[in-house]
Length: 189
Figure 1: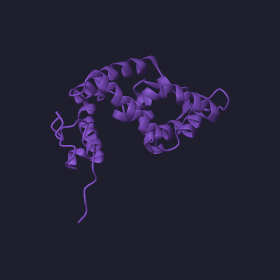
Figure 2 (figure 1 turned 30 degrees about the vertical axis):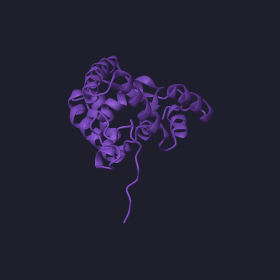
Figure 3 (figure 1 turned 45 degrees about the horizontal axis):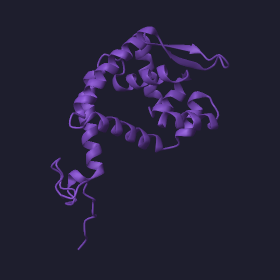
Figure 4 (figure 1 turned 180 degrees about the vertical axis):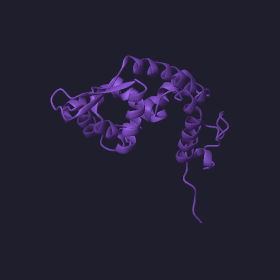
């Protein structure tokens, strides 16, 4: 007979006010189930928030990356965002056709094209950010504002801890690994 792993209850009462019996080891106490349920709920609702962005969620990610980070090549952008390079071509093409991004020659290597946002791309991103924020707030409606902030920060730390973020950021931004470490430290604070 195997025993269930014990899970500490957040309070003395094994049935927390949120209705979850943390001592039971039931499915709702499992990290994988929770992450999957949240992800599926997010995908269902977020699709509408970014429906106007060419390339959908991937197009949105591209716009966020190119407006908040140094200009980078299409290949580096694909690696940074974990998007297949062939799929990235389609996403960039769709954004370019909509007038939201431009491919410009790299200042030091004219063979490389950097992906940069246009004013229309920035405006589209701002609109999509507002819509997506509303979706996120609705999804996390059962959490207090400080809990929402904490959840976002904790998930970002977990996500950044996967893979090799220092090398990825250094490569994507064309900076040294030491500079990338400083950059990541700043955004994690």
